[in-house]
Amino acid sequence: MNTDLLDLLRRCDTPTICNAIEVAKGKRGFSGFTRGTVLASDAGGVMVGHAVTAKIRALEPPTEAPDVIRARRMAYYKAMAEAPKPAVCVIEDEDGAEAVGAFWGEVNTAIHKGFGLAGTLTNGVMRDLGDLAPGYPVVAGSIGPSHGYVHVTALDVPVTVFGLTIRPGDLVHADRHGAVVIPSDVVDRLGAAIRKMQETERLVLDPARAPGFDFAAFEAAWTAFEAART
Figure 1: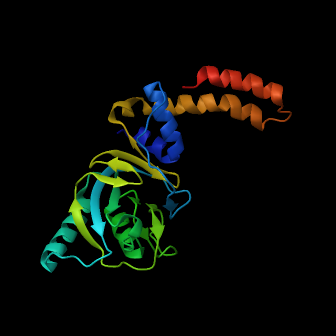
Figure 2: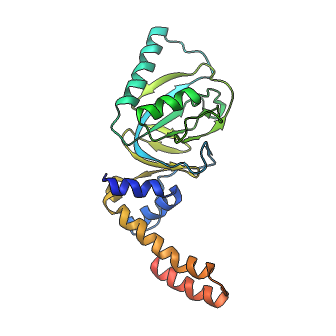
Figure 3: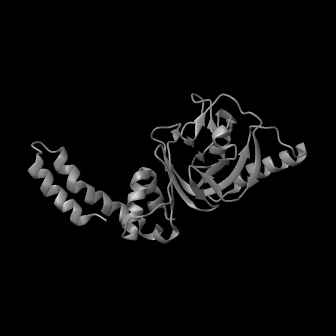
């Protein structure tokens, strides 16, 4: 991904990316996005990068030997530190709706930001809301006070968060609306698609924001919009 495209993606929200993917594909029906409500640590935070994936649990103590658990945790941090950038940390909490382990707080956001990650997407828990690393967005499933028995159970595997399956290396865009996996076959056309979509939306937005906007102005604008949109 070239620098210009990366900068453009960082300036766009995730709904814009969803719409632009349909423009790039020339049709509706794209479904590679999350479902349900997410919680965002940073209302304006956007993360873009290739997925570095893992799974965790925290509801019950681990049953494996402590040295096995520690070795996997160190392998996790090594994978995050050495992942090609830009990269997004994507974590599936296997405890699901019962998740209690707030893996994402002051310490881990500082570590992952230091490693150069763009942010974290997880169906799990975050905490330390006043002390999270600035400029490191977390999109999570819930907020809670405790880390529980949190431990890493798997690395570099497909994960599912908010109904979306994400594979290692997938290009992810996420913000307070949720997340989307950008298909590899549209990446080269995505910048042009974003600009086209924004131009199309202005056919309605500009008249709607102008003085004297009424139904006649709307009807004319909407006709032009429908003729131009995907």
